[in-house]
Length: 387
Image (cartoon, rainbow, N blue to C red):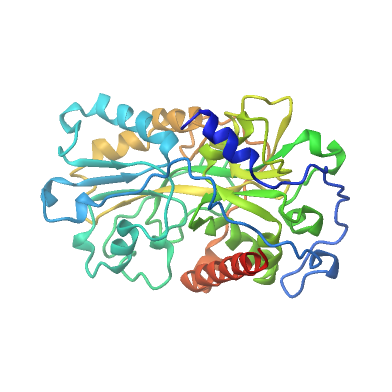
């Protein structure tokens, strides 16, 4: 992450309002069938993060290439905050698999919709083409309904308990195929100086208030939008809500870029940041910025494992290690909610918000993502046409 004067100049060049938000809590929540008229009044379009590029991480796909394919039995795609500590945790127990090309491949960063890895995974014709152990994060293409390979015929099933922090969320996979390891939690970060503390948003629907037009910075990247967050709004309030949410979004930034903006005293003058708790906990100036766990639950971004059918006993010691309470402590220390039922998690104040298997199984998730992208693109084009 660059920390030179060029970044400061880039941030200061953004035309952001200096006026604090005047916001009264919305008395009526929107419904799925329609949004109250007071939520549809914002006309300020959003600008994506085209102007701030502090370095984005992409993936390669060596495990799907012809080179050393037989050796790549395990692939772990983890958020960048976890990558180094997870590799160290794994290699301390299994030093014979340490280093590149020794059978374990690790990737940095959050998901990107167009990266070759998930495009290929979604279009594989046989479960035999999967690595024996696959660990991924977020609601990626493995959750897409048409993926006929993700079932108990091709992958192991797991029976296990969930930690108290995740109990009652309904996160358990109905067919027990995904073995969840942990989850990141999307929270709100408010600049206290731009609010009366009694007026900060306390539930997700309040982000639809037109008073927030152009005042929210959303987790994402230049050409990547956090579909998991948007999908929650679609689930609860319908696609119309996305239009207002996009209008209220100033731009999208990777969480590490958000931290850099906040370190520069919030020079973009945004009122609210929507970001993972794993990053929010690293904010240095906590006297000015308040971390808000929404009353209706922090949105979960899961970390899940798939094990190919018949491979459990080949790798049972590895699987036991990365699902252990010690692994849970590693996740918790990085700000992720551990799944292991024997791991204590003290930083979650209320029940998190899981998107729900009924929604995932009944809706066409790729189509919803395409609709979200279309709305964002249209909103951006409308803004550009006025410049």
